[in-house]
Image (cartoon, rainbow, N blue to C red):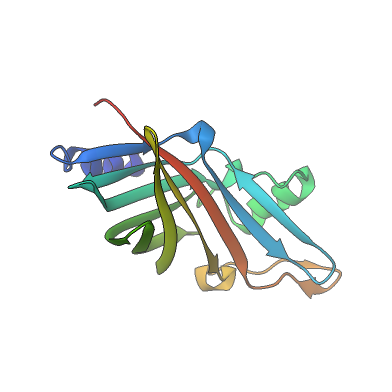
Amino acid sequence: MQRFIFFFLFISSCLTAQQLRVATTASEITYEASHAIHDWSGTSNEVQGVLVLKDAVPDRLALTASVASFDSKNEGRDAHALEVLEALLFPKVSFYSEDMILEGDVLFINGTLKFHGMSIPLSTTTKWVQNKDAWLLEGAFDIQPSAFGITLPSFMLVKIRDLIHIRFQLELRTFAS
């Protein structure tokens, strides 16, 4: 309910600016994780969000995805990840920014990543390109699960690497209010 109120207030406070919504079917967030024995990745195609343009320049961004929506193509690993990430207590990962600088087709974004009940500042550089009637936002960043209070899981007595690489490809489109 809090997330709904957050998005409602975010959208209603931007009535004079152009609003873009994440085209869920054409967008994805992928994580890449590593262990001494193997690497793996998981992808969510259920990203939701809004980006506000002010004078045709990105001004504010709010994104969210369900932790359970990430699919690594291994049901056992995904089920264990939901336990480790305490998905019943912390079902969403979200990002919010009001600090963006556009230089050509490069968008510098400073914001807050909320994951596992903790909010941590996050800065990333992305590619921002208009493609016909859509805008594409592509980028990557790294996080440390331990910084979010997550106990790293082990396999064969060796913990996973405390670094998760995140890649995102978001298609954003104008929507009618």
